[in-house]
Image (cartoon, rainbow, N blue to C red; front, side, top):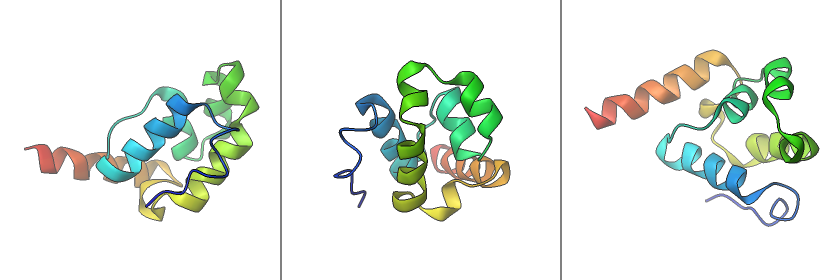
Length: 90
């Protein structure tokens, strides 16, 4: 479902694993990736560690090109994605 071929050598593995789990299973991610998913550049940069900031372009490209559009792009999309996950758990 998610093609990681172009990203494996550019995005830290832990971040790719987190993004795939987010896209497939609505699995929560950390503050940095949540900011990326919400399209909040200021928050993403503020929360990034060295490896994340270096890979930010590739992370954004993976999110845009590989994840379902309804799970990222705005705080509302992210909130709804989380709510869908919580509804399936109940």
